[in-house]
Amino acid sequence: MSEPVDLAYPFTGRWLVQNSPASRVPSHGTYLFATDYAIDFVPVTDADRTAPITFGSLVRPEPADRFPGFGRPILSPISGVIMATHDSEPDHPAYRGLPSIRYALTQRRRAAAGWRALAGNHVLIEGSGIIVALCHLQRVSSGVSVGQRVQAGHMLGRCGNSGNSTEPHLHVQAIDNRDIERAKAVPLTFEGELPADGEIIHVSTGGYRG
Image (cartoon, rainbow, N blue to C red):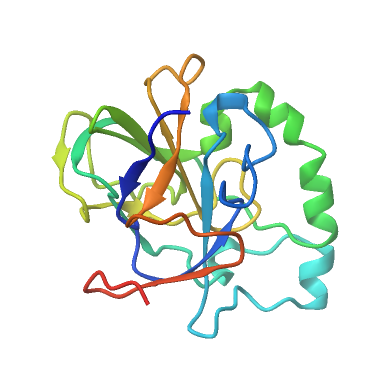
């Protein structure tokens, strides 16, 4: 296993950790597309909640903008150069309850379409010898271009629900090669630590984690 790359948290506000490699590896249940150490962050309210669950939530898809973090700014977790950006995919509805089961049945089809179909709108940043991918961004929210140099904290886009996503969230992974089919996964830490599933990360506008 390679040495982990330490990143800044790519957001402010409160976010719930899911699918963390601190809890299991591979974190997403597969080694496909170098996701061994990938991690997900779900935006939540000040009460640490996502969108309230109603009867309607259990039986039909929900608008993505009903969720508290839809459209939150996503920041660069590392200083480097933008290697790729894609932001033309639609933000589809969110799926909980029975809709999430139906959505899960289409997982194989999405995986067969490749990493880009799973990632949805995304940005790839190269820095410190590795490439960091930030995925599921909001459509037409990217404010960066290929070849642009950015500093950690630079706004890259907004939290969306594109690609393989059941509700608005941010997927982060690091790889050693831009060719995702051949790349190896690189372990991650954030500010020297790796948060576990269920942990709430709070980052203030001043960069403080509480």
